[in-house]
Image (cartoon, rainbow, N blue to C red):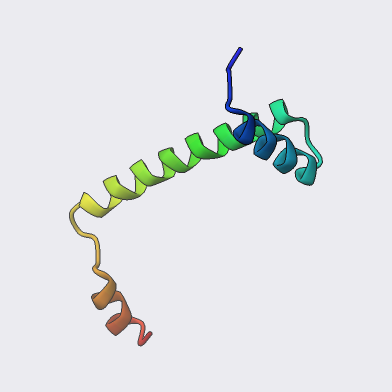
Length: 65
């Protein structure tokens, strides 16, 4: 079991209630979203290092943005 300081536990319970979820489900969803975000960030960082990519400035000029 995880021990949380009372103010943090209260925030968790209030946020979970506002989302209509149990605190466990709320935390599970948050952790899954966090891990998905980390995967997306790593994929984006990798894509930025691949050769042949176009820069933002080149993209703006090319498509008149």
